[in-house]
Image (cartoon, rainbow, N blue to C red):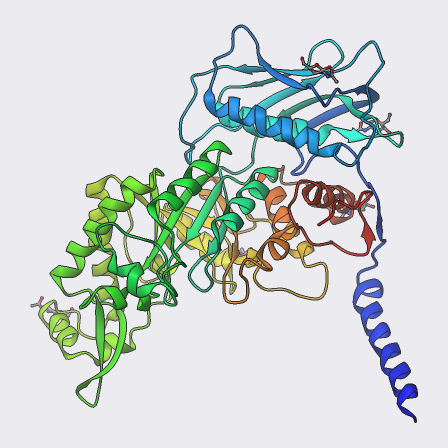
Length: 536
Ligand SMILES: *[C@@H]1O[C@H](CO)[C@@H](O)[C@H](O)[C@H]1NC(C)=O
Ligand SMILES: *[C@@H]1O[C@H](CO)[C@@H](O)[C@H](O)[C@H]1NC(C)=O
Ligand SMILES: *[C@@H]1O[C@H](CO)[C@@H](O)[C@H](O)[C@H]1NC(C)=O
Ligand SMILES: *[C@@H]1O[C@H](CO)[C@@H](O)[C@H](O)[C@H]1NC(C)=O
Ligand SMILES: *[C@@H]1O[C@H](CO)[C@@H](O)[C@H](O)[C@H]1NC(C)=O
């Protein structure tokens, strides 16, 4: 065959392959334009609406406290933000529609029924009621966080008619999240992420009602966190001098998140995953031995030195100031015992303690001491599942994060049987990608599907989507996360029985287009298009 012939055959093979993967196996229909105008993602607990639509004036839309409402500066800023969001929906229209109807909606009344809280917490109240009708539209909540969630919902109810008019259906929504912990993990150690990308991701999280940014800020590869007590940690442990998060940067992230009702839980993972720490803090890591001599390589943090605990204590005192959340993530995953085994000082220490050979016990001693430091400082903590698997007793309000994909149900049953709170991430490692609509799997995972009593199920307080950083940086992290993480958002917010992918698809397509319209480079779900080209 000549060259052209081969080319045609191989092009045909590629086409066939692509079709097999996308159409036949999964039976998609393309998503054409607006598939579900005015639908809400994640789906509210109760959403009743009629086909009656009311025009909305976008240009001068206002949010007004009713007389009995508390006021709150966090909300004042949110009102400005959502005015911007509403205006951006009509940014493509050269002729703005001026509604001539007698009944138009030009304001949303706000009724905040309790004092403004400054910082979100694990126990924050996010429930709200929203009524949209001709004479008065009103958003009511017992907390500022519920008002924030309701504002997001309100913004999603608006849609554009074929004639370019913005309208909203007559609607009543009664809503609250199924789980109180709904997180996204970003890893800024494998690749540095710029502040802009982190803030953009916080916007996307708010559009999906996520409420925890789990900041896996440091790891083996680099230490970008700038500590004021131990400046050498980032000076020597960051990839480069400019790939760091200064105190101002961290404060900016925390504030941006707070304004959106999102907690920032930093993870300082030890005793493993800590190679980069050792560059700026001599004697912190365990020297590994080969043939009875130090080999020049280092292992986990050295658990037998007093200096280790002085260091951690000083660092944590600073972290408590820098990160206002009452929780810190202590890590504790994937501790390799080989280096500890090779080191004669460690062996001697274990002989003294009568724990010879049991290196999990050594890890327990370490985590126990770290947890005592946390307790002393008034910090609650989250740990990865290995800590409990290795027999460490954690504090009553500790949260155990289940990540291993091998039998997460068994792990959840075990952790909750011990009486610990748990969050699950095992089914939601979004850094793993496939050539198909993999959100189906994320969406259909039922977290409570494990053997346990009602009390045990209540100990499961939520979960999170993880985006580990080996293969992502600012160039691709947003499209890789969104809208795939939206599937997790709905699983964690909406009712248990909202799990039908056929029904979710048009809403998710709509939501993806909505995110694109708002400047989030969310990737397509499948074949099709959004009704407008938003220029991303
Ligand atoms: C909103 O109103 C439109 C137009 O009357 C109707 O087609 C649509 O089904 C309504 N949507 C909802 C969610 O009620
Ligand atoms: C918005 O308000 C401004 C000032 O109050 C007014 O000049 C303008 O005409 C209003 N625009 C619309 C569309 O109502
Ligand atoms: C060390 O442990 C062994 C086995 O658990 C026990 O028999 C022994 O009494 C212990 N010795 C000390 C000094 O605690
Ligand atoms: C629950 O336990 C039963 C009986 O031991 C077992 O057959 C079943 O697979 C378990 N279910 C899950 C989700 O682990
Ligand atoms: C999912 O929804 C579709 C469309 O409403 C329906 O035909 C299908 O039976 C549902 N699937 C399940 C498993 O309930």
